[in-house]
Image 1 (cartoon, each protein chain N blue to C red):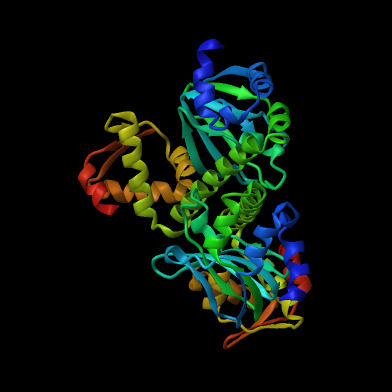
Image 2: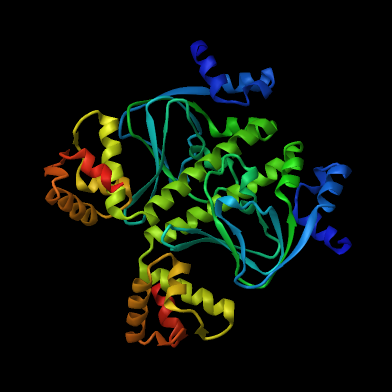
Length: 222
Length: 222
């Protein structure tokens, strides 16, 4: 744990406003977790796993419809703190999200009840959790505007180019179903647009793989 | 102003945590405004009108696409406080909204810079603005789930029934274009669904008016 204290005190920006006792309470109740790519970290209303400090990796937060459609809200990376996984401690959060590990991830987890114990007595900790939540509000508004307002060819082109730079490769190993989940659309809509992209010479499709042929052409769509 | 003090101190729940000087600063800088139905109250990024205490009426908050499409996020009524009209004082709000008066509205307005002056020194006022913002985050998530996940017949039926109970009438005097703006869809989609509702005997359409014929039938769709 010693080598984590630096990371914790830097990540929890209210650290210096905690008493020694409050710091110890957190340090004695912080747990190291390892998630494999694809693992579910937090699942809707019956879950309140705690405040997550991301040491490495990536977490994806999304909402899920009754019929299984996913809409990605935002992604968190190294050094970010995930607060909606402890939404039960924020009484005015009335919605539920799901969180998956998108990459193998190392997480330091502060149990929800411990965080609540600290933030209910220390207004700086409370303020930290509010400000973090409002950051995520801004992320969600961004996602919502992308999904609702942007024409679909543009959205799909942005997604493909983002994936390219994340993977450092010309191929994207995702099914149309998976791409649809990421961009918040239906599989049929994605397939149709990808086929259109193929006829335009922008991509080449094969089973489970989208190969980018003309990155410049895709970027012109954006 | 005297008869407003009760309303202000009840509505701003941090009132008792303010010093007499802070209370006076707010009272000396609160302004009464009257908005007519349809008036724009706040418009995107170049605007930061202030914190609005709604004495009567209704404000509607929405986002606007480049091509003029509106998506309604939430509505605020008597006793509510509107904070996103002062989003410039919340540094982690990176998005812009528009706010219109939906009914004739009486508003008490606290100038953004005065509210910032108080909340930057009084952590209770700061916390109040954060909690209020997070309430709106929950509203937005609700709207987003409605828009993205709900089938359109259901959404339109809910909208029509809500309008009925707001108007205490069997007729809704809105064009298809206006309805489309309220439910976050395109005019063509609304017109198509309304025509379908008409063939099902649920509504009767005439220029600028939707008359509800079979409310029970509409409610069955929900």
